[in-house]
Amino acid sequence: MLAWHGLAHRYAGGADIAYADFTLKPGRHLLLRGSSGAGKSTLLALLSGLLRVQQGELTVAGARLDTLGPQALDAWRGQTLGVVPQRLHLSEALTVAENLALPALAAGQGADTARATELMAALDIAALAARRPHQLSVGQAQRVALARALMRRPKLLLADEPSASLDDEHTLHMLALLLDAAEREQCTLVVASHDARVVESLSERDDVAEVVLRGAPRSGPLPSRLAGLSGGPTTCSSDEGLT
Image (cartoon, rainbow, N blue to C red; front, side, top):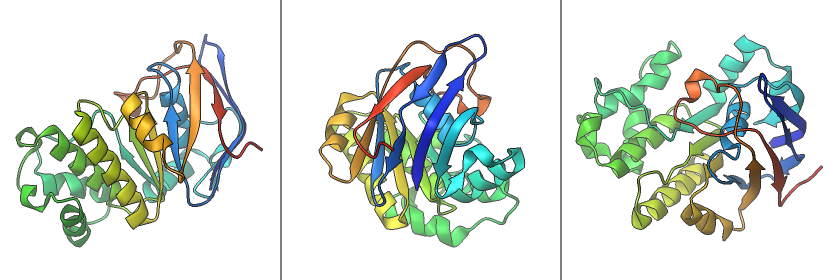
């Protein structure tokens, strides 16, 4: 379940960010759309638990994030969340296969080589396992980042500006990969984008709801772990599930 009620956030010295109440119906995915700086990053940070909920209720994958403390949020992220960031943050010192092992190693677990092999085959990157990120095309690197995000079988998959640096053909291919992965892994996909190609493609689907963000420039820093995301104070409107 993905829903928020009375959700608001304030940056130090900045304006309030107020979000219209929203509930995502079961079996649907979500498109967060709006121009650069409209507030997508703030909402992504709230959904991922990197920004603490200051006001209102926020339920993500069955957990009330507004009631969880820092340690519980960290545990929830590790068990629930997969992220394909705008800046992919693949380690140049590691091979593709080693990059896929990072989520488990960061959680203090052993590398799941069977899972990595499964995902590399599903995303057609098995032949790239021994390569390093600088040897990959943009599209290949994004598939590696998607595989990494799926390694721990997340319930929620977040993709920030997945069409960045991609031409039309590769943009459509990346969206298809994300949707196919969400269906295969039975997880909810949340895509944040201001790209008209992404908006047009996802808006045509019956299984994708939209939240439209319109806002002013942000005041105050986002969490350092969201490096590469952009956004700011906003209000939001939705086409579905107002409560």
